[in-house]
Image (cartoon, rainbow, N blue to C red; front, side, top):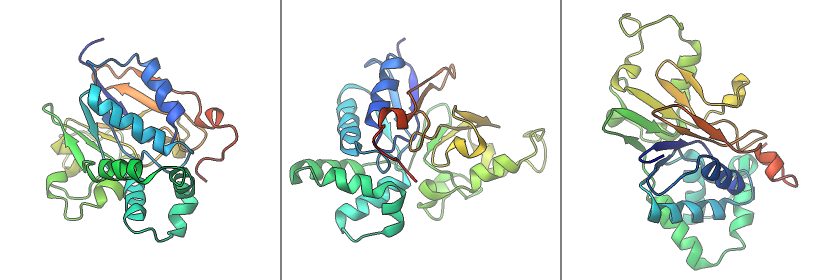
Amino acid sequence: MANRTLVIGDIHGAFRALEQVLERAEVTENDKLIFLGDYVDGWSEAPQVINKLIELRSTNECVFIKGNHDVLFLEWLLKPVDNDMWLFHGGKATVEAYEKLGRAEIDIHKKFLESLDNYHLDKNNRLFVHAGFTNLHGVEREYFPEMLYWDRSLWEMLLAMDKNLTEDDDNYPQRLRHYHEIYIGHTPTIRIGETTPVNLDRVWNMDTGAAYKSPLTIMDIDTKEYWQSDNANELYPDEKGRN
């Protein structure tokens, strides 16, 4: 199992789920790992998640995409002003976990969060982005970079799109023409009743709801074989996760 490229969905502090999927996929140092963001906010082990990601960076070729929750947490680290909506949607668990850490470790994690990529485009024209993008000409020309980790319109468009529409049709969305495949997280597949990766047209949604009562997923982007953790709430039976 050498030289695979594996993509990992939204983790949301579920360190035990992350450990499980890495083990179940039998990840080795030969594998390239692409993480789609939202490493924090939900379960209580966000610091352990980030420590693991930093460790993996030293052993594997890794890509770390920026998620909206990572941005919100970094903003809090830089200027700790309460954001009630963020705290309600998982931020409280992250803040409480980081209260137990020393300043030196927090600073290391801050630098990690500051280093996250807005998107990744590989040599096979496969795009990896946390949420989506709005510019018809692609991510490189996105007017508002924040949309790369906040946008839901790409996924909503796919859900509403005629499944028989092909690239030859004039009405085929221009946004989709630029990339061979697109991998996203951000909008949990549990919203449409699925707990496995969902493929619509050329887009794969990898957020299988690990912030809630569903598993974390890792997938081989070439074979589309995937591995999942136990449901995150079963791994953290004394916690609520995200509301």
